[in-house]
Image 1 (cartoon, helix red, strand yellow):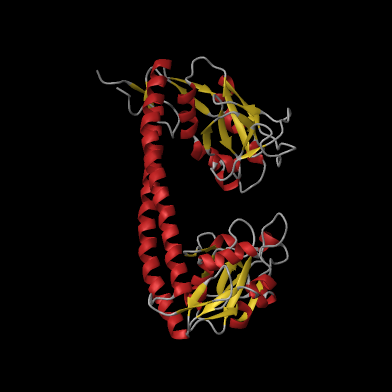
Image 2: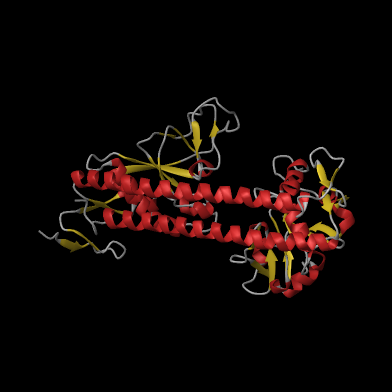
Length: 422
């Protein structure tokens, strides 16, 4: 017999099975904001801290037990409220809830906890829509409390949860496999770059000792030269007076560290400044042929070059302008991207807790210098090889995006009753 449906009265839900009910989250559970543990830097002395880094798989921290910080368990559901990542929903675990996270604990016997997790997972776009940059108002519990939840019979919830565990688990395994292959391709790409900029393209060329332990042997005709001797400018940008408040919707591009990647310049969220401010900051304008290198924060070391298509642009203080004089632009870019360049990024960081590279440190970078013709041949070879690898990576990234969309759609279809677990 065909399933009967009724209008939910809620646009994003549409029709739902006739026997399903509605409720509000404030009546079925409790919303608790996390707090920042006082002793968060002490390792291996307490429960895990569950926050943005942990939920995104970037870090694992423990701390000495602070009774003022909310404790979560595997039956809780966590929702991240951290800037661009806000809205991400995850199953809880034994730990404490940090200030970037809230926990939702269900106390209604009508619910299967895993079904409730998928129901909240389906609401991620709603939670994300309540985020305004990194400001605090989105922490308000009303965004969950007043949200409508769908309540199927408990037996059906259990079927839905079991089915989604299976389907989403399989999708997650495929995503993890694609991510692993992407990481392997990135390692392979860097090994090709490193081999080319440290050994050249001729495997039979005579080698000599570079005189530097961590560099080892280099081709006989190559030199080891400080970066300062090969450039006409090494310096960072600056932020205009007023900071982000003076950005405009159109004007001179203002590049920040989030615009500089190993694969190229990402201008999808580029800021702009006026011509007047650009003139005031003329010392930090970029020119075609410049190499841009991120010198602070988590993206330190990422670099790419500027070509004629960029147009007028300036940079902020987190990005260094390296202007080649006696070294090919693309060869310099590949040298900085190689293990040789990235090793020096690690060796020469300064600035205490905030990772950073000074202009003086960059001036002392050691570059391996073949002839100009060989530099260009190496750069041309790497352009071709890296393009091939980047194409493979893009295919796998697209596959990941498709799998994530599939997970979203299958969760939506089953928690709203559009499809039934038979």
